[in-house]
Amino acid sequence: MAKKVVPREELERILLDDLRKAGAAEGATIKIQELRPPIDGANWRVESFTPGMTQSDLGPIVIPKIEARRTAEYDIIPGS
Image (cartoon, rainbow, N blue to C red; front, side, top):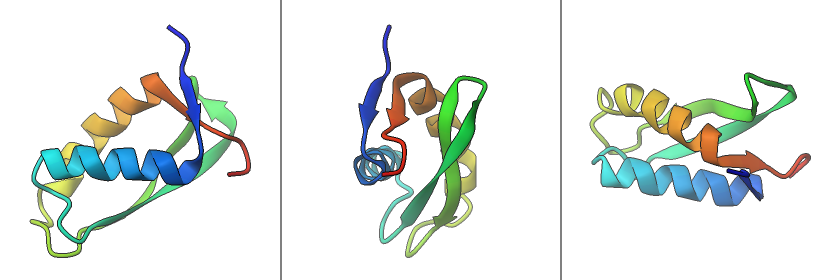
């Protein structure tokens, strides 16, 4: 299956939505880093996560799972 290619900001919103569904996004922020060259087929990774008002211990648990799933589905538009 071909990956969807989206702007960085859109993917950050998708990831925050995934975090919300897991109960870890109230007031949270997430930043994506573009990878050049891609690593293991992914052209991005989660660079930072700020928990905001969330349960700070939940984010580090769910982010790697979300990242692994979403890197298989999405690439970011280079330079976005």
